Image 1 (cartoon, rainbow, N blue to C red):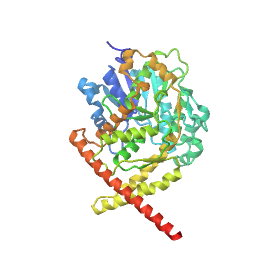
Image 2: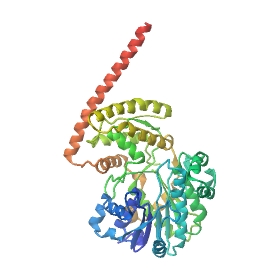
Image 3: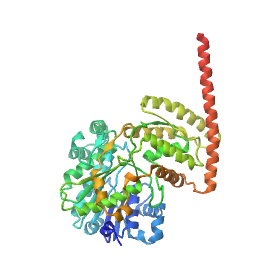
Image 4: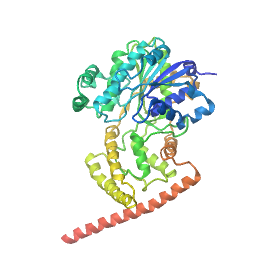
Length: 496
């Protein structure tokens, strides 16, 4: 027997932007596996060395679809790519494709975005803000439209510490109309030079332009059935379609990747701050459910509903907890490709982080690169550290303090769902088992990012390497402490 949400999606036509990204793939896979839609169109742009056809072929071969194809072998035949690009003034969609979308689409899930924190302002405005306006204009032409889900971020209003499920236009230095007018009238270089003035108290162009996109929704959604989904820090999937699935080492995942690899040993972070991490599959489930709720309440709502999605206040986790659980789980399933024993220290002082990086990272990295040169390989670690440090600094505004996210609408959505729908489309963070989750995350990273099989032989090999590096790590610590003690003795001997 089908659930209410499953009946809602039955024979519906869906249009997804951002479908080639991590969350987009999760959403599409869940709709195909758990419901019976009529068709799914998804926006795909060509890249420098890959056309749309090549990208779609690679996309369909992703491991995330393995479970789906076992139960529904022809499921991906329901997918049709729409060539387009959010950088283009008209989204790069042809007239023929536009007419097709206008005629057939009933559900829109707009997730396309550039997630680079420090994307140049002219690019971030085009992709994150202007494209949202263009998508709303397209949706307004869809006479069969039942729901439009705008995927935002919990940090779209990060100038505040307590963030409710509401709009905050007062926090921006200028209106969205003014920002987009500047985008259209100024050169890219001049607009990018104005970035500090436009950002105001926002830490980066990502959170700023995603926040402006919400202002587009507030001002232009009108009577459209629209909602906004604000996920916190999206991590690996928890249960579906496979435990621990992840396909990219970006953001906070990149830091855990570096720690596990034995490269990152010093972090700019407040261990006491709450870590608002949420599983990718829970995010996908909530997007699917929020479209159903939006359609169900379309005639009752005059203002778009906003859903903050973060850990429940009854089941919080700190960055210190995240570090401890991640380190513990990582040592249970160690990577064979690690280059040193995984350990981590942290500070909340940027100057101390910069100083510490010399000894924690650059000196060992320089020595490691010398060994690479001597073995005929290209040096890479010092160069990699520069990118790693940029990522650490970019993330610091989000992990240096606790953000409180109101979740009233999210909890109301959960309560409105039937028991059957709660089981199929689970996003209940109150019952999250963090130990189990991080165990699955590290297993998933090992398999999907490090490409190491979960076999006994591979795990035993990893444990032997971990033990070897632990002995070397202890030996280095003894040498450093002995050297420091000797230097102190020399200094004291001069004055005594």
